[in-house]
Image (tube, rainbow, N blue to C red; front, top):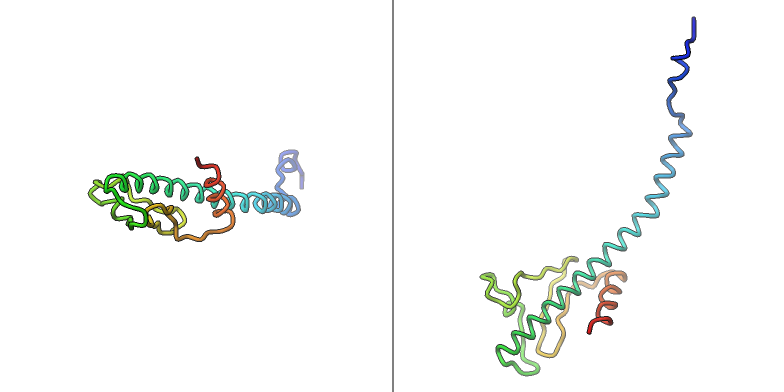
Length: 131
């Protein structure tokens, strides 16, 4: 039986090498996935705050157009209409699945979603920096 150079040069990976690669990939995933999930929640919080700002602006236009007084109720159906004649072009949808409420005059609109700490911190940080 003759061993040639060609048969010796063909070599596969050993089990130890494969386990090392799998371990390294596992460590990378353990580090990156929680950071990615945290960033996704933060982005949802930012999108929710932007929707609340749009609702607030539409609500202000509605209040001035209808000459409403403090404490008068404002409903989301007053701001958005399916025939696109309302003050909002599209019906706002909470990225986290909550529902928006316009509230009464001189009260900020709210979202029913009481999210994670990261989601809420994104909302609060944007509210503090808003003019």
